[in-house]
Image (cartoon, rainbow, N blue to C red; front, side):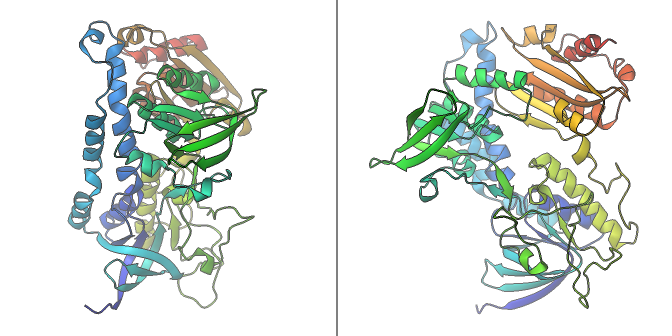
Length: 501
């Protein structure tokens, strides 16, 4: 069949068919518009196949086994090690063996069209796609183009690293076998989670971080995770830089480390090296330069968006239909999820997508003009106030809202209350339960600005805190939310009592 150039028109074009792009398209279709998703890889995106789902599938068996081992009676009934083959097989199940048939079927049932290929913006409201079917598509958007292209790993400037075939998170979460020795460069969420997962699967793991582990969390919380990793045999090297990585003749790797302490230089030998040092918006190759956007000082390109996901600073092209005028009319370019560069969490990206999709549909119908009210269905207000985050290590970390430091920077009159999690529910949960909790309080309004929990399975405590922060529930009213006994949630009562209620 001879390749063709096909011209199509839709109300909304979404570049990127991950979880975020799917949600944007779903919302605009629910709003009565037509939508097309442009995707060169698997429908469902990073979270479904290489991030959230496979990483948690790798982590959960180890957490379940360790949980049983900490409860007398159960401990005597379980083995001491995981069946790595069975864990990897279960991981494959959760990724649907890297097939997207069910996701594609959902698109069809929802009324969303899919074009497989690489797409980029050529002019306002126009996207060109080189299709994987050999055809070229020229797509016109009547109302909006949405960038939902996710993020890509940031490679650190380590000598020798760029020339080597090392693991990123994709390779780690899709690994077919467990390496005997694994070196993890990076002490963030993915590095911490995968270091523990592979240690429990049988790897001899060394984790190297230039600063502390999980530095965005309070030190009292993150140190519990450090202890958990070390209990699983992970050699945790904090405040240590990786100077170079070299491949040896036998296919192994040598990492040369430089401590920021008097210990000096040392080396680590590994069969695989996982680099997990952050991500940045995947905006290259989208034609944004043709719209006047440029990266600054050699840094990856970043966009600024408003509360509906509308890209700011889009140049006005005189005489070109569909570009913003001086009065801000005719908005058409949006960015959501990781591509917007605000919060690199799937759940928050889906939240943004739903608000953006609703805003696009409302603007198309003339029901929304200008900026929406905060906390309306069109505004991503929670991005500024209540972003939840769970680290699925064992013990877990869970946080929402502002830390003490963030609250002070934002000008709040702030106080905090902290204590170990030592309640009847925690002692029943497991022997020697160790946990920690913190509430951050706006003293002027007497409402929560944030909360952090650390300990086994504390992720299940987080949504209550999220509701309290979003709802701005007064502490005096929150005191009447009685936690059931005996549950770990009783820590809420202890925190409020320590605060003085």
